[in-house]
Image 1: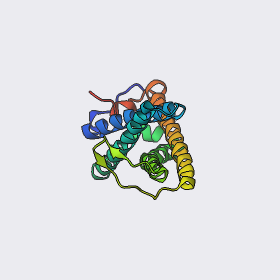
Image 2 (image 1 turned 90 degrees about the vertical axis):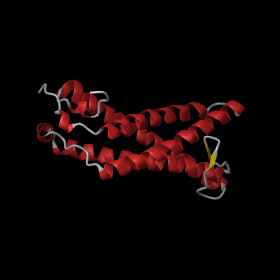
Image 3 (image 1 turned 135 degrees about the vertical axis):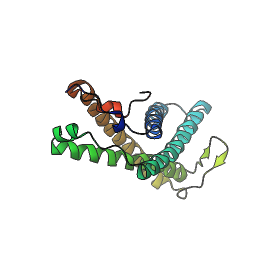
Length: 186
């Protein structure tokens, strides 16, 4: 099947922008988080950690925007030909992956924010806007929250990998034009 998805089946411009901006922000924040983990304590490390926190808060804000947009602007239905060709387990995986990713868009930054609060390090968004602590300083809780933040981030990256693999399968194996629905600039 070498057809393209009809233009009416595309996501809206706002949905496409939010998708790709969040994708880049989440990937960047993950890479920076992994990179900074093993750096020795220094002013440079503290700057990078602050950038990571700012990115997390921005991701949280953009995720809220994206969720509101999604709830108020119905996404296009899967084209009937694709829906019919998908086995039931693929449809379940499609929906389950999206729901879990949306949950983790919130869980990962909230766990990071709570971890920072439990460590006793406030977040000042972009060095200007102080955010309230989510929990009181507590070293034992900080250890648990750090683990939860890291595990949820790894889970999100795993789901992103599945999401990308499925999109590439549709593009290069099925050749059904599904990727065109979210491709910018068409």
